[in-house]
Length: 226
Figure 1 (tube, helix red, strand yellow):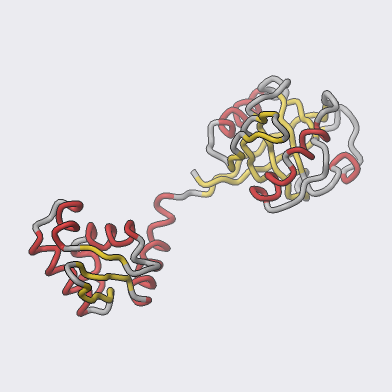
Figure 2 (cartoon, helix red, strand yellow; figure 1 turned 135 degrees about the horizontal axis):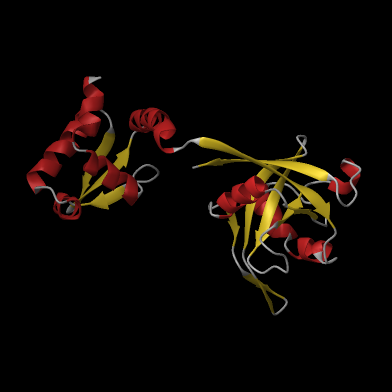
């Protein structure tokens, strides 16, 4: 416990070392530079570094006019423990649920899913079936829920150029579809649909999986950290 007090007595020092990359490599600094960046007296920074070294939270050695510093495994373990304790304060897993009725699209879903296929695989960690399932949201509360989801960061596919043509950005939200299939909501920056229509992708053909026809209702569940 006393050693952890050493680690966090002047947190700006250890946080600056993390920022510089000392958690993975040796970093080369002077106490004067550190003091200037952090806004502490140089003598204070020197004392803190010596205390961290004595408690085996950092390794340090003099290299010319600089000192080489890196965090020890002991320090990293303490940081992980602190992170695990702080995470619940800042991250709350919230579930959003809504449903909509199946709607025929414009027939271009397959084309665009194929174009974005590599991007979807990279971001969503699955290869989507080449096509989207479109849902029209008709319930007011479900529309409000969808509005909230649209305002969340999601997983972002940045705009890109392919074969000389520009394609817009897409936000993705991993989702449980029909209570059974792990897929995602995709929200293209450029779309023909109104805000009351949502497009879904999944590793399989959702129409076949659930034997869907136009007008059938499908539930969607999204879990996000907010």
